[in-house]
Length: 128
Image (cartoon, rainbow, N blue to C red; front, side):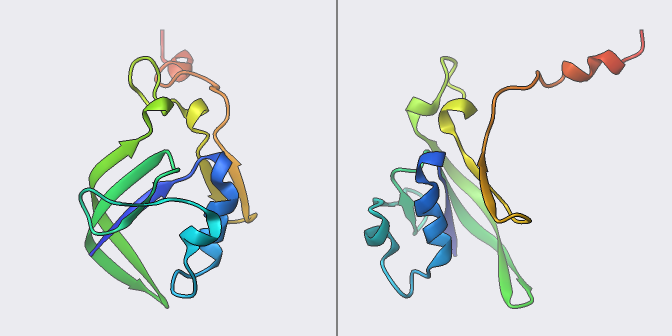
């Protein structure tokens, strides 16, 4: 009743794609991709050493949705590669180069450059 979320960087797009293509019941996906499995610290589940962000979660609820099951979890721990932090110790999205999946186009994309400051760019619409 636990799982990990391993967030890949752009460098590992092909390996992450493969993990979504093939079932672990059919083959050892770590051996096929050369990625390194690690044991999670707080849950009984594997982590991927090369991925820069890892969330360890405990299942709090599961919901049947047709032929699928949606798992809802409580995050117990978050790990981030320290080389991906800025000088203030905050995650740096430019360094991380996290990838996302566009379900409509079946394409991967990555985070881009900063386009503005939150809670500042919209101030131009405030009265006075």
